[in-house]
Amino acid sequence: MPKLASYNGKVDLIENIKVSPMSRAFLFSDSVYEVISFYKNEFIDFERHLDRLNHSLNETKISCLIEDCRAEIEELLNESKSEDGYIYYQVSRGIDSIRSHFFEESDCERFGFIEEFSFSNQSPLRVMLADDIRWQRCDIKSTSLLGNVLQMNDAKRNGCNEILMHKNCELTEGGASNIFFVKDKKIFTPNLSSNILPGITRHQVIKIIKDKKLDFEEGSYSIDDLKEASSIWFTSTTKGIIGVEEIVNLETKINPECELLEICKDAFAKKYFS
Image (spheres, one colour):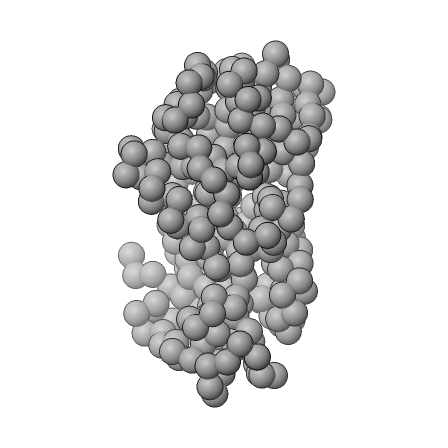
């Protein structure tokens, strides 16, 4: 099926969209983005995604009306015949007349595309521990993802499909996801900070955990805690909730299908995919 995209409010086939090489997204990664999933043509937690996009815009001082973003994202879904998938949507500071670190006052630049995607039957992950080499404001969903890209591709060369990042042995998050782990029948996840993106699925899972009255804690955790973990999960918009079967550079025994994980997965599926 032809891929639809939107550029500054105009929907077209993605191959027909042309972007200026003077875009600050192209020159500086001076842009932020969201990935918003939908199922049976309905967005999942749309308002929370918009709130996070608005946070990213405010923190980077990119002038853009969130209601314009909402309208363009909704139009892109309405124009599409896709039932299940996600929309990638980014906003850059705009297009410069000259390349300069000092940005000019200009109209923001908005781009998004729609991708069909199945959220079912994802296999457990093989993961590699990696130093967190990203910038210090990972709470902003910036398109500047070179640190993630380099580490994720190192992991791929080692037969992995995700990384589990740490700063000086303190756990942060995955390359494209948040992390949870189970130890002594209790669920743990690193608490939010400038080094961790406030994941939408993370929020949904924590709400499920609390509704189910499962033993739970947010805090600061180390690689040593993982050595004692019986189960490790990753959560994201496209992964949903998915278990880890192996950390290739850490000696630990992991159950990718533990009872607590299955409770959360079942509740998540009933709420969003039924």
